[in-house]
Image (cartoon, rainbow, N blue to C red):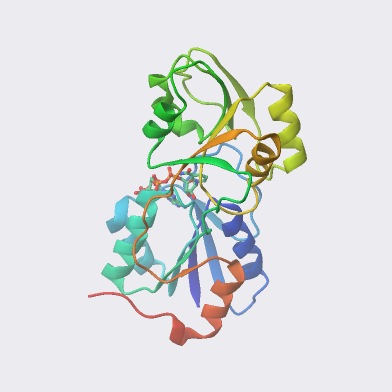
Length: 251
Ligand code: NAP
């Protein structure tokens, strides 16, 4: 069986590790090419877009792919829509491997918002020190709230920093709670603004904010296409081993 994994997440890398250990499967990992130095991957890797849903469909046919796994980030809306459309067009089964969003626990002071723009507005009028971890491509939404002092964390430096009062920390997950708490205290962070991305690799900031009693503004993940979805890399392997669970899509 030939498998294409759309990646760019910790979960995709974990799935790649499981697939690499299976000599009966041929798998390739696909990355968008957003980060300049992607983490080493245990599978053969291709980098760059396919050219929309049609391009992805052509790739699936040309490479004789038997299963498409969408293990992209919960906020990567376009590639997930493309994967669903390409699966329908080609009949290649599609499985989504994604994280369940985080759920509030006692002590959490969360405000859920639908978009980055709503997050910028929810910080409020009074200037505050904000830990902003929404990815460097989402920063422009915060230009509408220039009164705040932003501590921006991203893997690669933002190409253009549109925020007048901002400091950038370059780092990549995983982020442990202790380190997150120390960062928040040292930098005088008053509020955390982030995406509700789920998973464990970046949960440390949520736990740290709870421990410090800090408010958190969380952008809700977008709705995903209606396709078979699992939350653990092992569950993808289980579906591969029981092909009846991989319903063929298409028209
Ligand atoms: P997006 O808006 O959904 O996708 C934009 C375009 O990038 C797609 O149409 C596709 O180009 C290309 N693309 C995206 N993921 C790809 C992949 N795995 N392999 C090949 N091409 C891909 O995506 P995004 O939000 O910019 O995210 C880009 C990548 O970063 C994703 O792989 C995602 O898993 C990862 N990531 C995203 C976030 C986030 O918050 N959005 C956070 C962490 C990691 P074509 O149309 O030309 O095929």
